[in-house]
Image 1: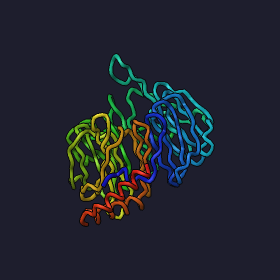
Image 2: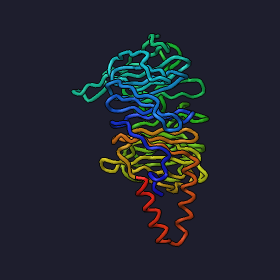
Image 3: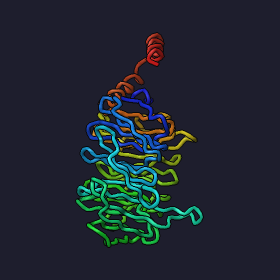
Image 4: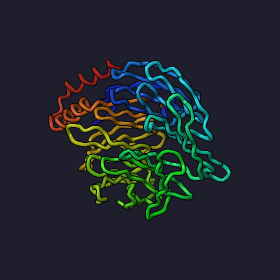
Length: 358
């Protein structure tokens, strides 16, 4: 089935989309490469648009406060009005942000083009009004902030690798797993946090090695049972909790990946594979690996899912949202239609109706 025809909402940000965020109430936030930030409500109506002037790389919401990383800055907005509340310049690029125990944690990094490496990074803590609480500078870049069971972990690159237990103020306890390779990504499930490494290893926060994949781990997603892991070699694997492989798929490198909502057809995994300057968005049945739907889009850099909806943001400016109930019905209808004989007059009428809708 063509995913585009099953979309619940399609909007345009007016510039390439760098980051999307789906709120639990169904509202959508999208940030752009040139700093535009727009919010739509759960009916698809535009609530507000703001401009930061620099690429938005991450965002986090707590109550009525939205915080984004934009270029070199950490910027806070009133979620209801879109008015900027405060802005703080970090040292180097502002990479990641999240709320933690009522405060705001942000990651920044300084990249040296000549050395082709990160020279210094930092984890910052701010109050909700923008007051700095503390900063912990380090040689390693924290590639992932992962929360699990009221603890926060920061996965590190070279030279230390492993991860930090971000509790209170620095110095933080450092954990080094058996395979001491740089952490590239992380995710959290119901029973554990997982980290991916450059050697293809997936390791739990306890230090246990769960599986080893072919290539450096690019994306990790926890599923209702097990996890999905993809590498820079284009390998996608869904494994059981103990690391036993359920199914795999090889293709072009992935640009985004997320656990999707539960459909009538079962649990879903959404992945975007690069196809030249575009992306091929594919929905898999998470347990069996069966392909449920796909469609071509502009290059996808970000996607997000909640219980009932999924959103993707494309480089051509499109923001596309799917509703789980509507998508389930469309998938069921597509299955019925594939077994029915073709009615040419009905098909022609449907084509005319689609053309009239634009």
